[in-house]
Image (cartoon, rainbow, N blue to C red; front, side, top):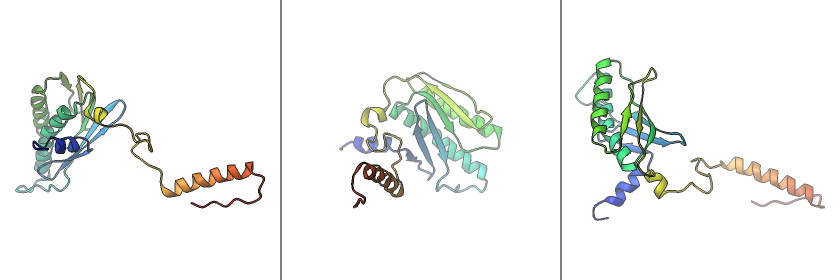
Length: 179
């Protein structure tokens, strides 16, 4: 508590990470890979009227936070980065250079593939140990890790279906159900 470690751990378990500028990144784990999406959020580009400048600044800020989160969460395997689309090739190169430079400081070996035709960057990083989320969390017993729970109408329909099955097994002609 004194050093703020618990607060950092709590932030490391959330999918959305806010950037200082007001932009944010969203980190999603799947079985096969990690997807990281960059968004401008509240950031509208103070001091610049060009949208491209705002996008580049957000992407460059996101690079630092992405590499920090990769190291903090100990993410490994295939990591797909979805930066905000940039029109100019030199801006994409600037973001790639910043990403490669930031990853050089990481002890875990990694490889960065260039932007593909969809505007995505793939990073492969050697997994050194289990990811932080896997160590500190377990799947939800209700949704079994899908992140979704059934809606009230869906549950009501399921109860109704089960009640009909039970009514068929009973000798009684009527069944009263209180929910």
